[in-house]
Length: 371
Image: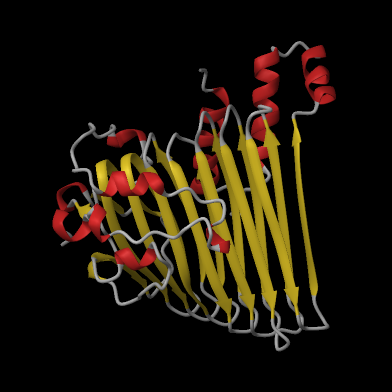
């Protein structure tokens, strides 16, 4: 079991990336030094019931990186050491720590929910998700509370396996960092949706090499920022084998003086004929003082591929607002409807799933939240 000592990195132990590093150009990590030097227990924990679904499915609770067995129903999830290691500067902080491993040998009909609560300070928690051949599963992870939650996740999907997952960045303050790496088997599918709808800053770093033919990596995300909040997303996908498919569908929404940065790079090796890659990055500015940065990149060395990318930033369409208001809809409600429509574009998983209803709930909460 993880202890406070092995999950808490002190300020003295931190070696953070610099904005001078190209892949961290838009990152501002100064606050992590402060958070890493603080103690747990500075903030009260939020109400658990507001984050769980009403299903009788496997549920795991971690508080400040420590597993809570009395409040959990782990099902097929095992708690213990994680073999996978990360080379990412933030992911390395979780190397060697006790975390959790999910190994599924047959289809898991019900979604697995994992809740990470922070009370201040920092925790560093690794995990490993392994799906056997032809297995399907659904995973919902929620980050809530305060402090710095630093997560390294390794995914290993067997042939024809499929994993749908939703990561909810719902911390009221502090910082959430997600480092995601792994291996996809032949014709395996990994579908990931992220949504950031609360007050914490974030960094998401997803890197996969598609080395088995027919592998599919789909990533969707909506990052909603207010005040001086920052979301920083970096996705690197390397097509190595033939016939692989990747999608990155990200939406950024920035209000007040917030900043959202989206950087996506897809590399297609000469060996990766028949590759299919698409990047769709869109941003919506709700304030002239907000900032949205975008950097879509394609590097293609194969000659038989289908790849495209697009990026656009704009404001709410005044004609659409006028149309809704002319139909008797309140101006604020009209604005909320347009925001929800924009954010819902990014959802890529099954529409009739728990993931969709949770995403919709989080989107409506942000759009309808009043200052």
